[in-house]
Image 1 (cartoon, rainbow, N blue to C red):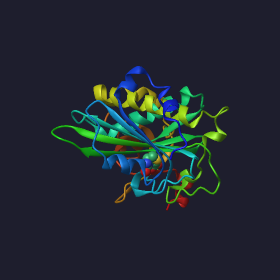
Image 2 (image 1 turned 90 degrees about the horizontal axis):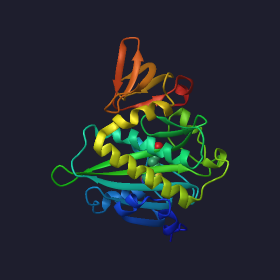
Image 3 (image 1 turned 180 degrees about the vertical axis):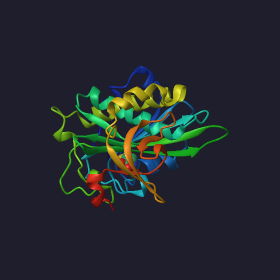
Image 4 (image 1 turned 90 degrees about the vertical axis):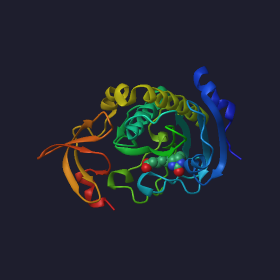
Length: 273
Ligand code: BTN
């Protein structure tokens, strides 16, 4: 059984989001909240389903990495949403959700959170959390997304970030950033509110309305980066994001668009696994 109180999680929700929340399920322990929602019937178009766990036994991150946290030490939350018609540039949704996550943290007086393309939440140059967005085609033109958010609340030194690239081994928890830690429920409720608003705004206008905010929070902007794209590696200066969510990198050959890849900073390239 979960240690969380569902009514306290619903408290920060706006009336609109409450009305759109088809289900809120809390688990003490589960394999992965993303895996769970991906296996469930999709919510009706325009509605969302949320699953939250105190502990995941097989939490997953991007690129098949594992996401590990001790019971109760992190927020493990997934939100499923059905788009009646698949939006253009769906991969950019992760960026819009990132803006929503940072907005939620700012609203809870957690200072200095940034975004590292495409899915990392960064604070004090360490990994505070991440987003895993998965897509399931539905009937006709519809598509359901499951967005999983992991946030370190308490970070213990021995937490294992597995095969993350070098920079991310500098993980960090809210406990060392926030003057006053929000309750797990307030964090979860505020996150649901911001994620729902982000996903429904994205449905209307794509990444357009999020690009200014992304630029403000963009941790990579102006940094020298190495992009590992499996078959090739490019080096250059990160220069923001395109309307479809691609990372722009200024290289010696000109501007390059990166659709998928792992970003490594030159100073941590040796630590990359
Ligand atoms: C990443 O940094 O690569 C993404 C991490 C996402 C972790 C969250 S925790 C809740 C949800 N369930 C999962 O198995 N993964 C996401």
